[in-house]
Image 1: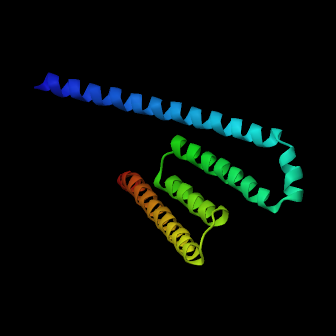
Image 2: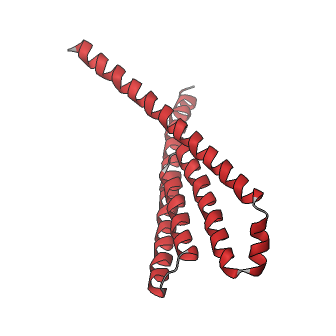
Image 3: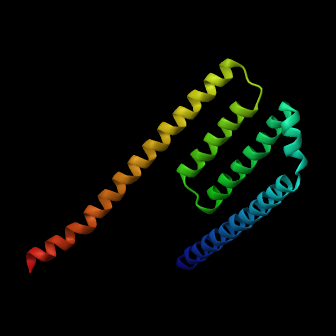
Length: 151
């Protein structure tokens, strides 16, 4: 029974390592796509000329820029997975939908409420995370103070 538990634990660690490796591969692929997208935007100088003559071109340009920003945030989420990073990506997605998309006033209102709620959740997570860090710091300090009193 003990051997089977050790084997299961070993398999779990191997699977975790594979997952970390796959996350890294996905992050590298996203990074390559971001770099290629930046190169294609910068390389196409005619976009800037079209921006001067056609206002609808600006919307297409904004879509490309927002997709780059979302890709960069997604890359950050892959490299540093946390609930705060996920919420930041969601905020950018909602903002992109609201700014670039053809939306109704009702959809804009829902988007604004969504961003506000996501910001509140992000703030709540940050505050609760700071409280947990303070508790851990206090716990770590308490044994030291007891040792000093004993001396």
